[in-house]
Length: 246
Ligand SMILES: [Zn+2]
Image (cartoon, rainbow, N blue to C red; front, top):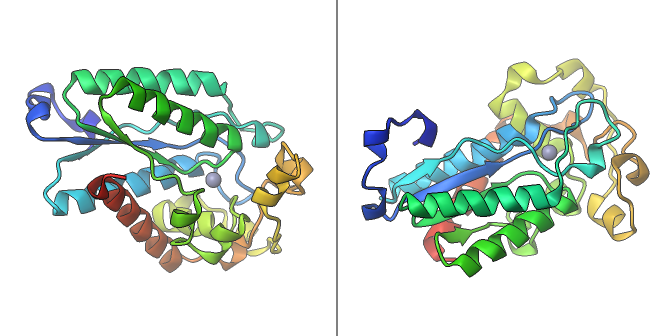
């Protein structure tokens, strides 16, 4: 299932498979005092893995590509540990990678994004557009910031209070529990600030949006169970996006 774990003879004849390659897009960005800076990478990987598993169950050959950990992250740039690249760098990388996948015979590229900095979302949208113009591979981008998909996720996610809060903390608790600082998490007061509203009001960093500790939402309310449930929904969204042809 993981592309990089295959040997080359196992990756021959991909073009005959109508194969799907899923690229997890994360970030290295401050995620509150309780979650590691790599949280978005693991969230995107979990979404990709569950999507691939569900596609395989439906008879679709699906491969998960190595995650892209680097992203435009200007919102979190003031915090230690955040690494950021230019949006155009991401667009160029995605377009180049899509061309290489097409040469390898991959029919469909799925962009799975868990990092919602506006510069990331717009860069992924632009890359998807440019890959569509190239014609191959078919590109599928289930954009979780669109209302139709956001409605299937949790109330906190829909509220826009979705950075290192209950939603993301639950997923990391389910995926990488040993890396969550539980003492710090339990002590964090809820911070119901909507990043969607903050962005609309021209805020361009977490600090200016009122996220003094690089989190919003309610991380203390997170749970492993909720994390598993969210990952299942995310996987279903990926599988449906591929099979429905959206
Ligand atoms: Zn995140």
